[in-house]
Image 1 (cartoon, rainbow, N blue to C red):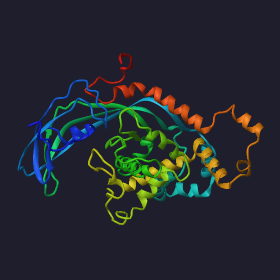
Image 2 (image 1 turned 45 degrees about the horizontal axis):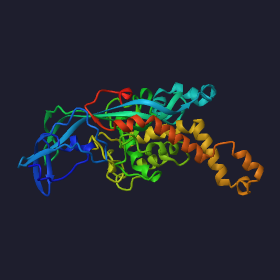
Image 3 (image 1 turned 120 degrees about the horizontal axis):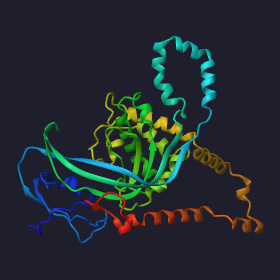
Image 4 (image 1 turned 135 degrees about the vertical axis):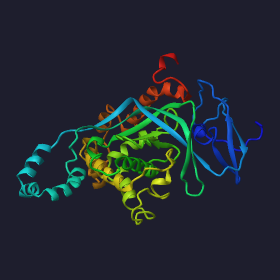
Length: 391
């Protein structure tokens, strides 16, 4: 009966919770989803807004002794890049010459076991400019999510009983995002549980984001890939972008920024940091944000190594150094800023853009680039990017 509505689910989560065959709990009773209205091939349904097009999942009360969990795939493609931060080759050759000529380096070459023990620390904490080139970027990405099946779990010990395949249409939308390179080719062979560490670092960044920008855990999301992770990627959950990741971009390249807060969260959690042998985090740190993989494959130890390595590389960039110098000048309280500006200086300053004017121009530039994405919003089953000429 279409009039007997039990609950409403956000459009972006309907395929994860109300797929055919799903077992849901409502007011202490167990229901099984029998069928779902097939969505139209091209539905313009923005996340967070109510439109005329709706999906209906019909459920029946049941007494089955298992629970279900959706199996989903998320594919994120970078469409356009606005900003890019590169790590230029610095004093790499000089450090190599000093380290090779030092007597400590000669003794370490003779002692193979000691060199093998210190190899991890040399890679993780030394030579942050080992891989030069782009390490961070921001722009527009296409997020494509597909629920391809589900698995039945035992209600006693959560052991998997069976798996079932589904044919559900993909949900695809465009939004703002920021991403950071984690040197997978170098660290994957050094750090144990590297992929789980990248996943844990992404969760830690989502957890500390409200400390820098007013947002909630439902406003931003990350790439929850569990295999062959090569980057940490954060994106706006709202189709077309809400501007949250664009505001978070500058806090990565400032002293005591997001990376420092994520490292502190990974290393000093008041709840689970003392639990020996457990690396998956707790609802107070890594599991405080939504996850399509249900908080599986998380490693606090590996994430801490990757975060410290990434922070070392970020500190070598010109953007971070200029922001650090600017912060030092602001804290020192220079006399030039305390003095009132003269008429001649105000006339000269009119020829240049103020920070607010520059930020306004930047926002207008982003809005023009995302105009087509806002029109397209969330599209179910649409062809891949691009199709702007036909809008």
